[in-house]
Image 1 (cartoon, rainbow, N blue to C red):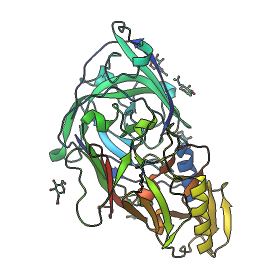
Image 2: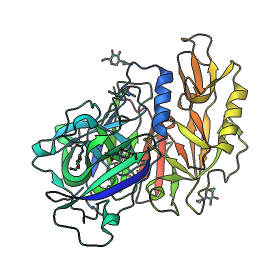
Image 3: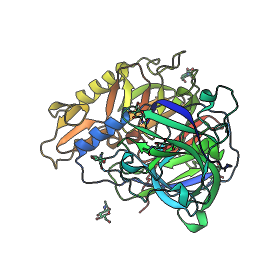
Image 4: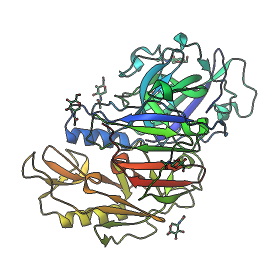
Length: 435
Ligand SMILES: *[C@@H]1O[C@H](CO)[C@@H](O)[C@H](O)[C@H]1NC(C)=O
Ligand SMILES: *[C@@H]1O[C@H](CO)[C@@H](O)[C@H](O)[C@H]1NC(C)=O
Ligand SMILES: *[C@@H]1O[C@H](CO)[C@@H](O)[C@H](O)[C@H]1NC(C)=O
Ligand SMILES: *[C@@H]1O[C@H](CO)[C@@H](O)[C@H](O)[C@H]1NC(C)=O
Ligand SMILES: *[C@@H]1O[C@H](CO)[C@@H](O)[C@H](O)[C@H]1NC(C)=O
Ligand SMILES: *[C@@H]1O[C@H](CO)[C@@H](O)[C@H](O)[C@H]1NC(C)=O
């Protein structure tokens, strides 16, 4: 997901302090009773949240791998949720795992009518012995610009409003002890994590109780833990029961055969672009046919526009128009079913009518994304989506000059390692469901 803007303002409040370390998480996809088309529409709606986040002063050290239980439970949602716990005593909650933003936030009591309904008890900072307001002169405060170098007033804290494409969340920056790990043996408590204590949000986060930013910025969980690397394995999109593990720290690794690695590309631009994990995509094939796409189609421009990022918080992959049209035409040329424009019903423009709602879709060859030094092979189930008798290309057109995004639908059933120290992304096909 992505932010459009972060507004920050200074407020006066009571204070407390902070610290940090490494993590591990359980991922669960839980589906509700929504139809596939509604599902895709909701996912698309959320995809318009292209973010912004502020690049902050570096902070955090620590080395151990830490663990936190994670799960997904959003009605009609297209997000993967990690479960972690906040405060003392620890209160467990699910949050969207988002490599496309930095802020870690959850809803805080009291928030009256401005909070969305969440699937876990509401965290109340007053009931936790480890909550503190983050001082607005902290290196992790997003009010640095508001202070403009001036000494903060006593008791100064930072109020934020992060605006996503279709949603927002607002509150005060706090500091807390977080607990990671499902089993007692795995559990690790990490004090002093800066987070957003939201007391007002839009209604776009159903199924979660907040979000965990895993981007490159100083506020992300990865940075605050000094994790160096993290990995996840997204369970099959339609599998609502299984869990997999997200790891942050030295134990996040990718071993075995079939592992491919490609370097991240550094953005020449400042935040929010500097938060994203850009990849160098040089071509796309369908089956054995290389599509006529310019090798520069996904290049990052000197002003930071363009490029392609990998994002766990976006559902459907978006491709710059020139590339999307080639993929669309190639898929269409291989399918003999009647093509329909699914824009209204599914939000996806290339769909096919299946003979009946229960018909299995025809076989399709794999699609290969040719990254610099690493081919990523997507089976048909990772680029086509079916439901309610329609079968659609699960990709969309990026026409507004914004970056292209490799979404989580295309990442299912792959073990993926982000090595932020070595600046590489590694991946291998995997069965992510543990039953
Ligand atoms: C989110 O919750 C609100 C209010 O509870 C509801 O109206 C809305 O339909 C829900 N959205 C999704 C996608 O479930
Ligand atoms: C949220 O907290 C801020 C800071 O304490 C306060 O100014 C604001 O009124 C609160 N908003 C709601 C909806 O409670
Ligand atoms: C946050 O920003 C959004 C978008 O500008 C706005 O709709 C919302 O009311 C703001 N929320 C608060 C609490 O200021
Ligand atoms: C998922 O879990 C539910 C409830 O435990 C069960 O009814 C359903 O059969 C499970 N589905 C799969 C695919 O295992
Ligand atoms: C996997 O790789 C990591 C680091 O590269 C190493 O520490 C670990 O022992 C390896 N695990 C297996 C099962 O080979
Ligand atoms: C992208 O990869 C191509 C092919 O390996 C290489 O020639 C090019 O220099 C790379 N671009 C960047 C920005 O790394």
